[in-house]
Length: 285
Image (spheres, rainbow, N blue to C red):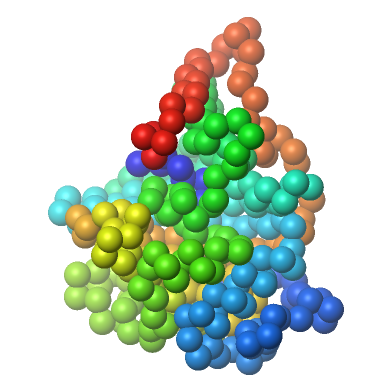
């Protein structure tokens, strides 16, 4: 379930906060200033989001990641922290660490750490002392974070991919509360609507014939109009299952320890079990 997950996570109830971009970091032509809080089209929002990506080089925040299995009425939640940084080579890297696991009515401590450095995806399962490392692209290449959308349940960064987004997905700006307040299949989502004053909802559906056609039914992402940071994310699979994520307590440009993004394999004497999966070609997907 948590394959390329480091962009996963969600549901803390405290409001999102972050530093405002400097006055020198003006939005591109045609994109409204975030203070205007309105967007006339998906393209206008995407342009503003792409610009937002250029105004910070690191981010941290609280996350809770919830999976609801529609047929089994099963709910799983993980609580933790998300970390993002842009390297000197302009490669964006992601990490997420979870410390709490909720399965149904049972809550327990956990230690799970997921990292994507642009080439390698790493799972560090501390409780099991298991280290899994998978090479997603060959040496010398980096993976576009957008290509993680198939399996990663949180799309934090759009970056310079606006044209690719428009080419691959049908986009719409929907009422930010209607889906949550009137969802007969998942009435438990209703309480989330109260968290989303002054937000814009972007809905994405894979276009027929696109590379993402069979990945999932729809994705909805709520962005804070004042900060242009993602607040809530809901992905609906073809099975009807939901992946729900909320990002909160955001800090921009924090000092992040390099160990958060360390994908090195533990040495044999460490006592960790390791599984390394090198790149096997385009069929790996």
